[in-house]
Image: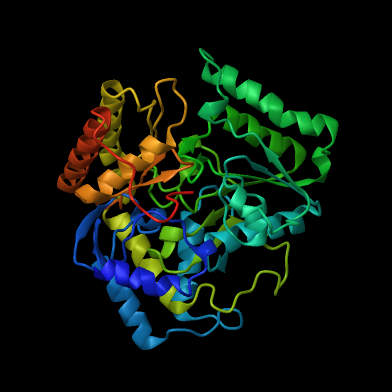
Length: 444
């Protein structure tokens, strides 16, 4: 028995099933840059970046050194009661990086989930209103508030209700909602009419505190909101005094070729949630937003013992240095062009690949059958073959390939990844791929 399987068998005796989505029988031992190595010593190209939580790559030397230096100095003293020299620097740094020509404040958390919970708190506190609007396909987290505003898996609601009251979900303007030959503006206006329907029938706009959206949905399939729809949505919130917030947990920090995904729309949000890659994968999140909104609540409305602790703050400061010094947003944009060309060529070559969605080093590739319908079985065959060939890629929604490598991936590594993907595509087209032999479900 290999070490991977030995460890998994031992772990499975006590690990709760709800805590892991099954994919491959692999145990990660260590990583470097854009590669990870398993417990048996096999190294893989990482095309997932720990769910976009390691944009700076694995064990970046500058981040590692910052963590080590801070750990020798002070690991933890709760920022809930006292400031510390490292976290105080991060507050100023994040406030300065946020979009919008207005005063910002910062509130720390431990995960993107609690950051989105905090957005709900601050929006309700500021407006004195109860209702929260989010979108189908969204993934905002697993705490009760963030889970309630999410909408991408039935297992996030099954058997755990009642959920947070006052939440209304609107249809997200994704490709599955689009009609044939519909222009961007026509599509946006038709979907926005659907957005307006509840406000005309049962949802008073003057009782809505918040609209929360992922400018580019992550776990929903890497799907960008149409510009015209986003403009209409933003204008609606301005008209009705509603807090406009964006979730940057998955798509922020250079992932889309810009620092923040909302920068693709030339809109400054009232609030935004940040997490995942903020501290290169260490447990740190933040809400950054308008000072007047952030000052609407008093402590301890959003206090956590370990949120923004010195070690995670040091990692975040070093992460932001790396993003700036290595121009990771620019690198994502440049290499994203190569990725877009590769996937577009693949879509023209293989009829099971639908029109690819690529935004920086960030892509959703739908795998479909001959009728153009989602083909989860083929997508599963692909990711398993890609795994056998030496790269890590998973699916979203069953049939969407998720392409999110670390932004530090080299040109040579990216070319090697494309070779692996093309081999898997070619073998699927030739009918050579079989479903993986595994004793667990693969994917969401």
